[in-house]
Image 1 (cartoon, rainbow, N blue to C red):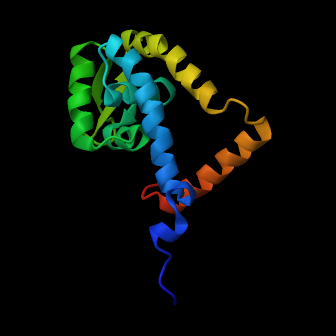
Image 2 (image 1 turned 60 degrees about the vertical axis):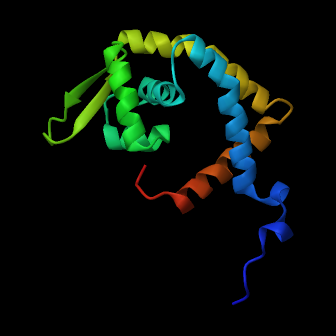
Length: 152
């Protein structure tokens, strides 16, 4: 088996993890001002975004979907709960587990942020035909299956 190519041989512009990090860095930076205006952090807004689609999930699942370390997520959830944007409930099947639910106030906070997210999303795909967008999503799903460590 031969040694893998070195990053210098591949080049940064041909190394997908580098490009994905740049894209997500730019995406997050584009949304920071809107989040700050609402008194939100990235972990808080990611949590609300996930909960707006998958309400009542376990904290460990929310950490995966929101791409936030569980300790950081815990602090974010404390803040969201204090602001009345989420509520915690003990899981009916496992008393050690906690489920997180978005409140109407939390849904309204997310809906105020959604136009900024949609605008940045549209900008990302400007000039890219629908067929290419669908192909890109299909590849991303395959990559996620290759790297994920859980069932979701």
